[in-house]
Length: 479
Figure 1: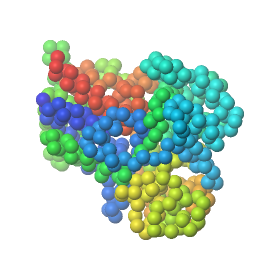
Figure 2: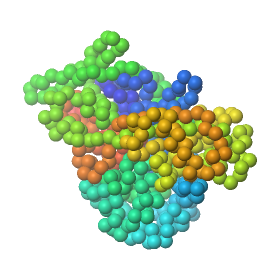
Figure 3: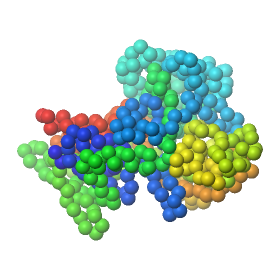
Figure 4: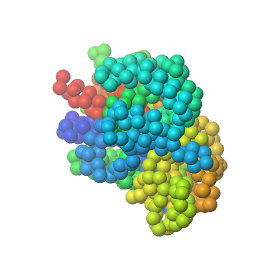
């Protein structure tokens, strides 16, 4: 069977792996000059690796980790300390430290009650809120709890949290940074379903809160092994191939895709296949769908989805920003020094960040140079129209507030990548508009982390959606 996949992000690549393993002839068409979608990376003219965002691999990304293992890239993931670290103004460090002799849920309770990020009142009120949540049921009935959590999609996490006894201090100091890291929204604007899904996984799966980061750039250490795996199985990947039109026919009260029109430079080609998968992001699928298909609610609902803007900033220094205690270590350039982990903050416009020269040294540590901070500005709305120079200076000033000792260092290089439309907006009441992978068009399928699956808009969500799309295609053949 011949399958055409539109989009070479993780969703499209995951679809292709399962289909090629099943013996299908797979062709992937990507409009960009590189693969990876929102997990893309590329080299600039000076040989710097630029990323679309900051990517963290949690231990409960079961489908993604299975895929990575299949393509022989599991050793490219570097485990980090089992602790979620918060950097507060003035260099004060707080943490959710999950390191404990016992696993979930006990390690989570230990992390929560020993955290200096929250006051005693915060901890007490958090205990009331989370103790009356579906998470407690999830300890003995995971599926039942997840059903309860899905039913909470209509309210924001902040409203749910306050209605269950939670307080503003906890929202500001802990849950907002985590919400921003998850969905680029604060607790007032993110669905309770989204946050409680993550809490549920952390509560029952010890490995869920463990995280890894890539040895280096996503292209070298994630996408390249996937592409090599696919190419050995005959899959063809075409970049700079934008799909301009989906052609379709209606016969015997059934609609079928008859071909897709693809731009190849100044030329247009019509590609035909037995099945077609649109593995796009929300803006991409909204542009791609024929207007005539909006008569189906499954497609019309997609136009009710919105996206969140985000800006990713990289700053290079002539020393080690996150080395908080030793001045000599901070200024030496013979080895990396500082905090080798993902970092959160409630005191800056970037919710989460990391020193890639420490966390992912394969491509980002450079001899004779220091920290390479990668920081995610959320929400990105105020920054999209600003100049890159203004954004970099603004972020640098906030880095100095978090790490006063960094004022002794110089910023030597910066990069800013803006996405006016990034993750789909996980707002209350939106989940019902997310489509299934199987559509009313008999040979047309959807993949992408915005489609129906529990892992929100994430790398795991994209992987699950791709595997579900492949399964739907293969099940269609069996019928």
